Length: 295
Ligand code: PAF
Image 1 (cartoon, rainbow, N blue to C red):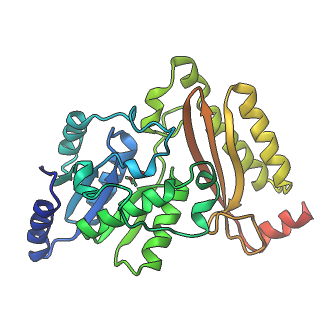
Image 2 (image 1 turned 30 degrees about the horizontal axis):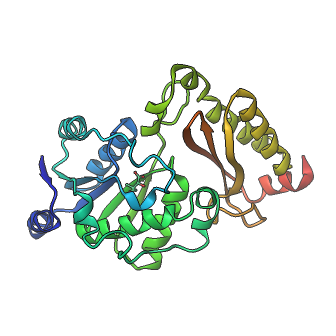
Image 3 (image 1 turned 120 degrees about the horizontal axis):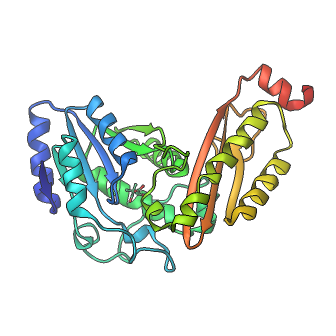
């Protein structure tokens, strides 16, 4: 595995692969790699000849009171994991390589509508930071395919929209959320949880599943379901940020045109903010008949 920290060197290496007709899959990460990231890498390997992984803790997507300083940086261990998975190229630039003139001087990419709701409301500027860095990384790596986890469902939707809107010739592939045995979605932030918090944390996924089951059984009072879920989370010690039943495509309220529902949650346990989601495909004829009151 080759590791590069300079754009120029990375680009010249990737040029070599492209010249001999090899396709490139890209997995952007912020490091502290867990099984969820490795699932992305495995999927990437199945799709293309060369897998490029980036590790860059992007300061532009952290708010002033967020965990940028404390964000786990584990480059040596991460490298071993990527090497064991057969990754050919690791790109691990410093902040000066990505933002040579500083972050304030950086042109930004903004995806309207999808980015101003859910996590976008509670983390202003977060998704502009994500789309800006992903855009830069895409331009540097120029992959054929890029892979993102479905755990960050809003991020995945926003990156998909950016890629379409800006006519980027890159296929965006979403990969299923990796979970611990008790259902907790794998996340670098799980490492912040105390033993007691770790015991409580799976309630997040349980609450999402209960809500999905209720909808699948025809319960259509979404406001009641959302408020019931928030109460449940509060009871066990979470501070819910949002629990929302949305159209999976628009991330707005469910309408008669909705083909798939996304149930999304963000909640803080102690000082750790966790997110998760589940989805439910609707059969347009029978499900909407049921949700429209026929149950
Ligand atoms: O999901 C992440 O780890 C980050 O938001 C990403 C996509 C690597 C951009 O910094």
